[in-house]
Length: 442
Image (cartoon, rainbow, N blue to C red; front, side, top):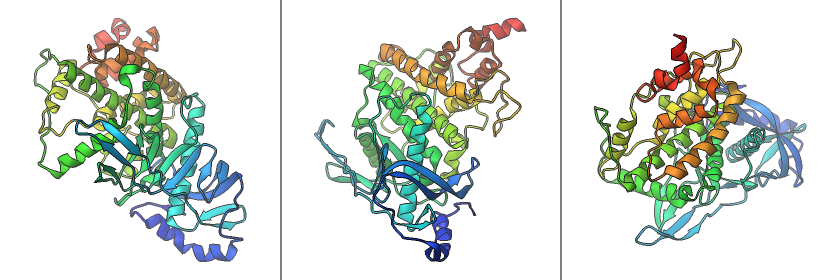
């Protein structure tokens, strides 16, 4: 069977139609309370945004009804809360991990079919987070993470000083609690609990977070998520904001100490989102995985050709202008989409197989495996440089690309990949400087 997910419950509504037959074939409804590997029927993306019912194996299950494996625990609902003083300093926090599930299945042969929507969503989460962990095991990228990973499904709100902040249509990794939140979904497409690319995106954030903890200046806390979310909620509830723009010229822009910190925070946030989008693609094999849930998010499609036109100084002026009180700020996802497109370009296969989309594959691209390994190395190099220059030097998007290429050695400057990358960032990367070996060939 094939499902388009045009409506939130469409998959489950079609699932339910098959239940009478399953009841006739079923041996019993609930899984035994014992460990082992379990075969479960869930919806999966075929790499194009179309979802079909497939049988998967969830390994190392400790208790299927309780949605627990050796590496992942899924809980349902819960209302996290924090208390803060008048200066915004946290005084207490309650992760409120929610209720232990009591999932329901029908068993046909050795396959377990979720018998309600909640079980279907949690089973899919359990499978994906287990699979994503295995996906990153190949690179040793799970080192430093605490297991089992905690996933909270259907988190509708959190509280700041007893004021309720509603949350919906999002999934997020919360560093302070080291937990993943899957919020209720009300759009007409693929619910986030089923979108493996989105879940791999969030998992990647936790890897980036662990690496950042190695550097004193970059340690993140709850303010990077909960308090920011609270400020955004208050802004949406008050007056409309204004869009920030960079300066028209390329004049030098000076940033104060505070502005420099915020500028580097914004670019690091954009790179965090970019790398998360890239691994979301590599896990799902769908470069437009985000559009399966949010059809209007076309700027996040990795396969679409892009050009980042702002120069080094224009980036600084853009960020500086975005810090005014009436500004809407800058969307780190949108900025990061350009770096994600670069990683997609680098991951092109070496053979005649072309990646989906508008991007022309360089003949000397790194390929999927090479780009994934290089990206993980880049995270360490970038965060180290950012930590050393956090308050003194602005590390722009183009500077980050240069740092990625430094890891490739001289070969990087001689490559077709280098030229196409420069064309992706024409405002900051000039081929004559960025790819000097290519210029000599001409």
